[in-house]
Length: 206
Image (cartoon, rainbow, N blue to C red; front, side):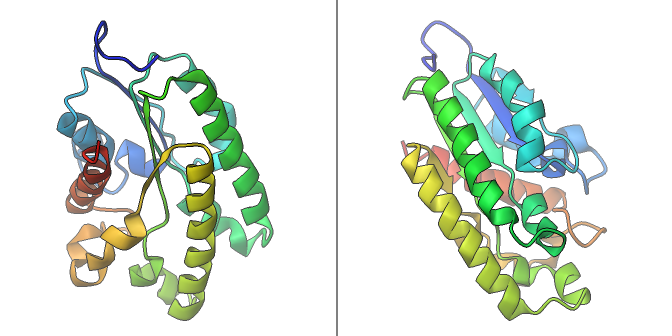
């Protein structure tokens, strides 16, 4: 699977609330998934995103449906909800790494090398004020994000997928407060446009 020669370009998104456009007034239009789908001229978009989804949730609820598709492009952004659960489960990174490897290995085994699998990492959350409002230091956040992103990078490379480095390319969060929505956490419509652009930058590399 993966060739577009005899079929429409099918795009599959595995994601959480960001994928369904939470934080915008028109989620079906302003979320990053439909924006990215438009950029790649996808004829069919299968958006499997669920608000609040963790990677473990997505393994059970989203991955089986993704494996049923004739996908040519797959995006995965499932990291921030898991990262936030460290407050309740300090060992979650261990299970996250295992789950991410499981998801990517199943997808890579199912689909041909022509299928693009793009995986987003964690942005610079030290620039998101809601964390500091809860008393979490920027130094701690930066150290933890770096630890998680190192793990994500290694697993993405191991499974011959493509890393979308949101941390490196979304540094302008500090100077663009309009990228964050009214809830102080989710991206705004402007933020989702930028997010789609960053995924598209990686997509355009091949």
